[in-house]
Image (cartoon, rainbow, N blue to C red; front, top):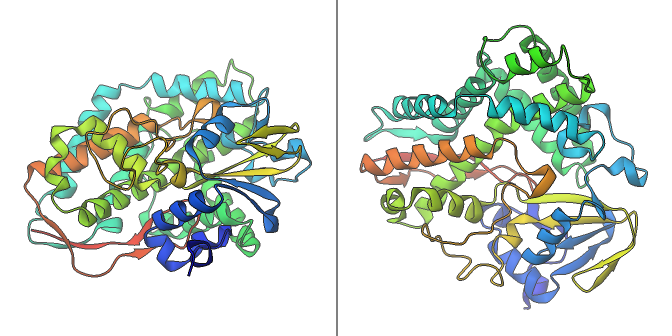
Length: 387
């Protein structure tokens, strides 16, 4: 049986249970048989090579994040920093980037380290469900610290976040969109409250003050703040859980992490690729990767596959914590690159440095349960024992 029949050229393959646990064989099969293929169900090209994906991300003149530019309708709730281009994008990006830079990141890192030590205290010999007992509480506290707001109720947050993530796969599962829109509305109510109810420091305080003199689209700004908050805990928590799973799958590597913590974080981002898929709309007839792409067609970038491309990474399926250079696409590139990448990286570095220095051996005491998400990959339940 050929690899093509085992892993058909369909984005629905990303939702198969075996693929959710380990998508690398699918990535490899697609690159070997047809690394740039047409998926008719969504009228999109699917790109799996690093060079092609990187080229699309940097060519803002040819490929857009704003699907309205090719005639697609978008709910107002989905219009945010990641889904708009100039001239709408720069004013909000500048404001949020300035708010981010204005924070005392050294103090934030110190508080993050203290937070990590508190969450890890007393774990020796304990059975822990890592996602909900460590990763999510830690990342929620960290992003709220950065934003300068009080953390919301975790039970509520754990109920509204999954429907938001589900809408990232709405092309394949359109039935999830109403629940995702409703969940965004619930989070939006909290964002509106935070605009007036925040600490005197933090990003919300900075934004609220600047809004008195800066002219930006308020709805776009609030949607982007919601996305900053949501990605700040959800995407970061998925990175932490997938990274711990990677260490479990590669015995002995956790103890080596403190030797190369900075390159180790970059390698975990590459290896886990929690942001598995990005999509763009072609604005002008062009050619990329030897294929003609016409205006109005979609291009779907399989970031997870690009991050395992042997043309860009030696021994790509190995977890090599000292890998350098490491031109992964895990946080995107260019105008739409992740704004909070530094905080996510700091959190990951501190957590696994502390775990390694504590001498813990981490073992699963039940099989992990993966989220059924093709776009934002993650572990839903990760039962482990710290010995």
